Amino acid sequence: MDLSATGEPVIVQDDTQVHVGIDLRPGTLTLTRKGKDFAAYYALVQFASARANPWVAHEVKFSAKGPDGKSVDLTVDLLNDAWDGPRAGVPAAIWKVVALAATSAGDVGITYAPPGRA
Image (cartoon, rainbow, N blue to C red; front, side, top):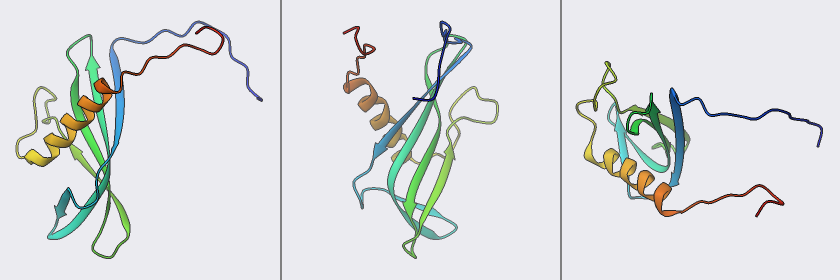
């Protein structure tokens, strides 16, 4: 490995973010933009906790196939412009994706110990 590292990293609690990626079963979520349908196959949900506040989902980035079969990325902002609540008009199916991501992150039960310290 051509890298060295020193120090004792500390998390900045002012704005902690977690990104959870989930694979979506093909054909289970269709996103429509400007009259065109896109078949979503992956979602990356971004959660944040600012200044020790509760975690909130603030954005979902979808990977989807368009009507021409080409892959596209579509982003949905989940918080209103003041960042103090959910954005009006976000479809229920997108909130279900957020719930799936949150549930999968908690259900996976990830634990970790650095090599040699297990």
